[in-house]
Length: 78
Length: 456
Image (cartoon, rainbow over all chains, first blue to last red; front, side, top):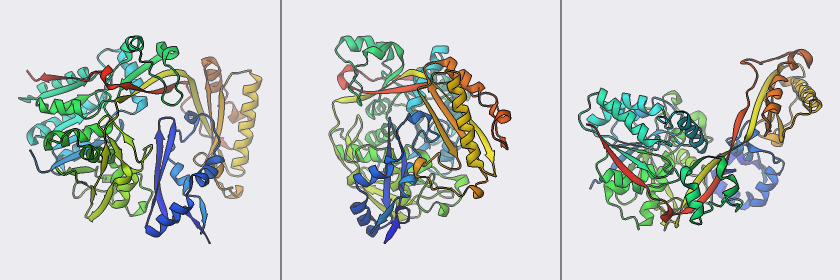
């Protein structure tokens, strides 16, 4: 079964110096276990790999405010 | 010593809701009003203002705000702590003293925290062996030192504690950590020992929850945001702090927004690096130790926070000018809005190339399609797209190339794809790109100074 991260979690993102930070919070314990198991460094890397490089400052979303929403698009196979 | 204090957040950044501090001091009881005005980019803007006029360089909203709230704060005994002094906290304090005098306030002590601005002492620091190496790249600052626009040390809570101990009613600082503004009154009022790192961490975490204003009371909330009531009159957060380190996050009764487990949790995970080591000048807080309990009625208890000893270093944030950028946009309508916008981008890029202009980067985004999520955006059925805004941004060290870029946008309306609008306000103007240089400095290399200005 595939679920969307959006349905089990919320989050917030923003810039921290030249990097961005994305925080994800499960709505309940069950969701937390799913996140712990599936939302690995590799999965997040793979998800954002498509995002490409380039200068952050030229982006419409230069502060990474919408990155949390972008991560919540992720589909997880449980 | 008190058994409880209420610290109100008045601003999440310079430019936040103007009425928020007024509401915080009028809609219920608070002991302190804390206001964070300084983002990294703000310091370079303020430094430039000060270069043009030596009496400027601070958050200019602050004197106007004080005119409005000072009589209330004096009457109720509310103390104000803010880093809005920017790169000229003395001028900021003088402006507030003038206002106090005009308002015929009888007694007022304003403390100024100085010593964070090291821009004029870079050579001295370098000659004593401090190269302010870039934290990310390890590079020495020496090749960049003459280009620096600003260089500030982040001080923590203790200069503010000293100011409060010396009787300050208002504390104006330069570059102070956002969290230090909130931690300081707890240390002062509860007599906390600076070596009790769990308490330092508890106050630091409370500061992190307050530092972005309404982001912890229902603003920018990604959970069930539709359930947040009356955002138009959103209440800013208040930290009700206790001597044992427990903090209850709340807001004034009757205001909009919401304080729940979820709204506080979102702010906790915002803009942090390693959650086990949130480093400040006062302690290293472990965010994974934090416990939250939703008490209902817009009250969330934050407790059991663990901390470790602070490091030997202060963080330094320098900025320097690194070329220019410009951005322009045009809006294309149905039918084939996205195809038109893509065609216009291609034409524009060809013209820029034919002109031989020099850019380090040209970035194209289609607002309405992929400007926020890039390649993660879902493909759209072209017939269902009503409109697309083409946004092109460029960066260059060559100012003339950017100026010419600005002249190539409007012509696309008559010499490109059809049904296009949205070019108003004239040609896009190049703006300076400010690059940041994060570094560390040994604490003993700089000394915070506290000066008390009395109303005469």
